[in-house]
Amino acid sequence: MSRKTVTAIILVLLVTSVFISAFEIQSVKARTIKVPDDYPTIQLAINHASSGDTVYVRAGTYNENVVVNKTLLVIGENSSNTIVDGGNTGFTVSADNVTLTGFMIQNALTSIYCNSSIGGNITGNIMLNNAVGRGVRVDSSSNGNTINRNNITNGYYGIELDSSSNNTISNNTMTSNGDGILLNTGCDRNTLYNNTVWNDADGIDLGTNSENNTIARNNLTDNTIGLLVSSSHNNTVSENNIANNNEGIWFDWSTNNTVVGNNITSNSQSGVRLRDNATNNTFFHNNFVNNHQQVDDTGEVNAWNSSYPLGGNYWSDYSGADHFNGPFQNITGSDGIIDNPNHLDSNNTDMYPLMRIWFHIPGDINNDCKVNLQDLVLLALAYGTTPASGGTPGTPHHWNPNADIDNNEAVGLSDLVILALHYGQHNP
Image 1 (spheres, rainbow, N blue to C red):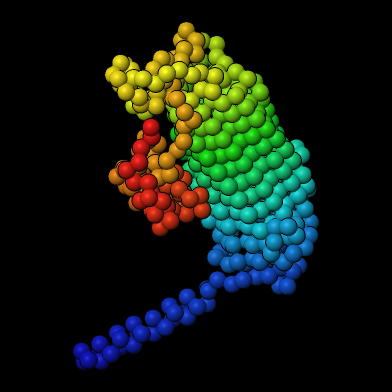
Image 2: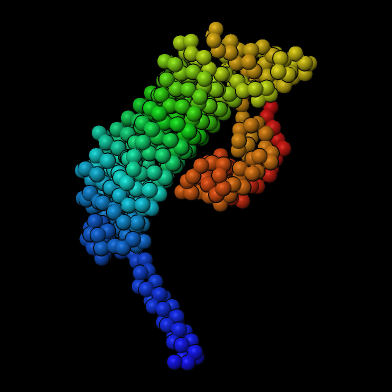
């Protein structure tokens, strides 16, 4: 057989393989399956779907307990009238990278249960009347999920993570639940931001050995306890509004947490309560305003300021002159810090109490009181990401909620513009 003939055969085989591959790609193209048009129930549609398909559910009431065991987009027509009336578990998600959106789930013991699922997206759902159950439960084999823009009412827990890590919980509204958000034992590196939790027992509850979590920009109001931190360490609590609760923040058996830039206001018992070896926590740039008792502790030793010139906290019940500056407040000239320390008790002192209400400068991503190159680098690392990007802040192409300066659930050009407008500013 001549060389030309062999070459021709090889070319024919290559071309044929390309056409076969193209045909195979075409044949497995994702489909959209409609309920009840194609199948009368959501479960039947899922059973007949292939990974990558979309199951679109028209408005109506579906009395089902649905199991999503494939990588699918499961989309309800409208969360106000696409109803799953569960009775036990509305949806069980047991596959990776599932998107579940646009449903109202009611009367279920658990509305949505993530069981052995990674990288899912639960967004834009309504969950209600789960009186003894949960809105969303994420178990220990499920990590890296995004729970976003859901409305959860009248549950025992709004959202519960059980030894689950690297999840993003954002822009949800929790009302009249037992706990709004519960991070049960061993939940690490989760990001909770821009959630509204009100009229719950505990707004956010960080359980035993939950570490390196970020709790930022949440609105925790009219709860029994705004934020409860129990035996949890190395977490960051920043820029939250914690107001009109009985207790604002309650720490027990918790160490090395950083509480910075929060508004802790009008809580009827105390702004911060410290109990049972809650030590070595650092509080600065918080506004303690009109709490019945600003800080209630039993002699636990914590830090109530950062180093100079970052300073300490604003206290509505403490005032004084600002004639001096410097680490020892002995150099003539004001610096926005009261000259005399605020002695909270014999063990705790704010060395640099602030003259005025603390305000956060837009673009100060790392909370160091100035907008500079470091903030620009952090924004660049997170540029183009959304909450679903997940990951650890400070690493390339991973979501950082502090870089979402305009709170639009994406880090992009508008955030860069805001940072540029404030570049070079500092506080005080």
